[in-house]
Length: 589
Image (cartoon, rainbow, N blue to C red):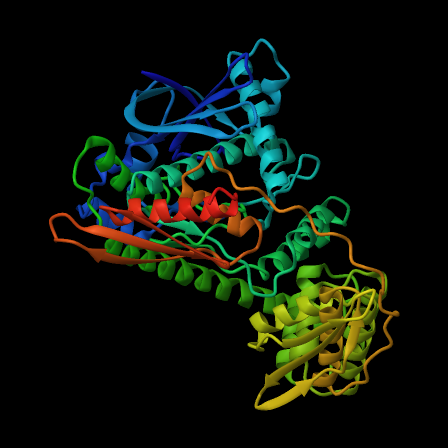
């Protein structure tokens, strides 16, 4: 019988994961995450599985929820209530003193929860050395904070503020917890669940088990990770009403996280491979992964092929988009009513960022010149540095003709001339908001010291626009300046004066992130490419020999390197090809 405790929101009734952590004197760690054995009740292609597949996930609302599985199961029979022995899938993870994963083991067992804890209980437990769970929670806290720092140093988009309760989710987007007291408990569970999901994903790759991977990619013109982290960390110093704006701005820089049968990596976590495994009561993707890995553990045939998994992924992704669109439409109508009331009352100056954004959208859709009250409020925000970037993008790319709108566009160009790095972000926003194509850049470098010259062009509504030539000591700086010039060309406005270009040599780039050779070669190569912003590896296969004893050759192409591997199965050949590429990168071949 395994030991464990659950930590959830106080109102949670469907507790599907429990934890246990041990720290050794040599600095190593043993982590156990126990997850409700939902696949035992909802077997593949059963009636209950069909119900879960139709609903895809549990939907939470301001008042209540709509569960993926019937409440008698999700909140009673399957939920990990204290004092009730429950069947679980167990993920055992061994970590060294540097928090590298040494080994991952999956098994089935029985667990009886020792306590149902809420996030807000955690600070009280940590401050009470006599509490029955003090030692466990203190150990889990130390590990979680270590994992958080490792993820941050690795480049993950991670931010927590215990003073305000603002935290990042897996994709790097900000969200506000109900109470700032919940933060430490949230950090513990978030870090241990990310660890477990990552370890399970790597286990599936290593053992050739097709599962639903969780993929997350950045948009083509997203800023560098360093800039995104600065934006997230600014949440600690900006007024509370502006945090929602930072949240929406960062979310526009990423593509939707989706499920897939193939590995595309996870940008927000900066991981080469990731999955969802720890919430099978609440998410169908996790349940499917349980069904696959449960069969693998028991030595039974897998219920789904990779093609089946691909079809399930498409279904889940489509259903989640439908849910989001319905919610977005409801929130849009509600926001429009509030914006209309503010416009009619002329009370625009003092509204929050979110309300100002909706007022901007409503006025643009009206097709007329903006009112004086909005014009003054906009310039006031711009002068104080409190202009939401999303509103700036809307005005620059969608605002109709009109003297006051034109004045605002000119004022925005003046600001971009002072901060040309924002101009590239404006084009990224324009791509998402207005369907603009991204510019193309012609960049040359010459001279000593080296100076780069950039010219930007774009085709928009059948017309070609072009910037002048702009110089800077770095390619990025020249591109940013050319982007300002291109925006001016599109808007038909003069190019504002910019500060003289930097002519000193650019600062050296950060050292290349090393390959983690302790991991499976496929995963290690994927993470190396993602961490160093290189194209992800591609694999192709050919087969020789008789059908009963084939010899499969896998060719891996990564950056400028091509290597092959041979084996009797595709996965082993793929692993050997990835290993061959890694050996070349390490100078071993």
